[in-house]
Length: 191
Ligand code: IMP
Image 1: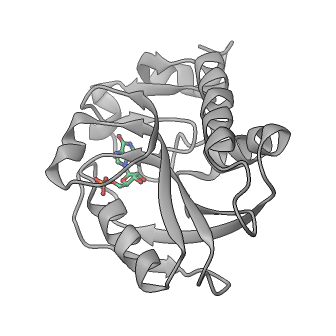
Image 2: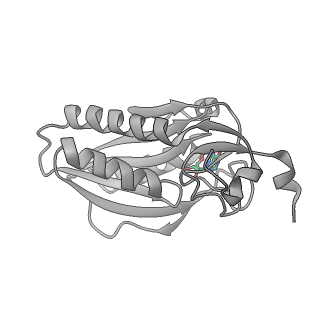
């Protein structure tokens, strides 16, 4: 844990440290770079806001050091609201700013839980006639088997618990934590 940050008191357990995240992202970027050495037109990275914002920032820079040229796009979808379980209802809050027809797309996703959001997103991107759509997800929970989604690159398989940090929130808080951890139960009952 970091020294003296306000959030340390709310965290029951750190699951993945800042260093582990950094090392894994470098590894993922090298894998993606090796698999897309000569992709025509470069890669189009699509970040799913807000949860994947930290991952997109670090992954795109790691890819820049070893991979083909990449362009960055952002989408925002909502599936959770204020709670901790997936509603299965996906709403577009911010759409793509450009035509992706014929482009090689990599979806940069924070976490695959039930898989419902990703499954919906992949269908959406395919309907916009991308040449290919692949996914790099930093975290995956066992619950992802609920819907079969083809995730080509996965950073960490983590326990089936609600986690926060490194972009992941609870009620819009804890995104700025540099690590990923589990909240103390009393945090959920605070008003
Ligand atoms: P899914 O549709 O259940 O796969 O979940 C999709 C989205 O829910 C993810 O992209 C996250 O933004 C959010 N999510 C899933 N699990 C967690 C978690 O443990 N903590 C915080 N957000 C989560």
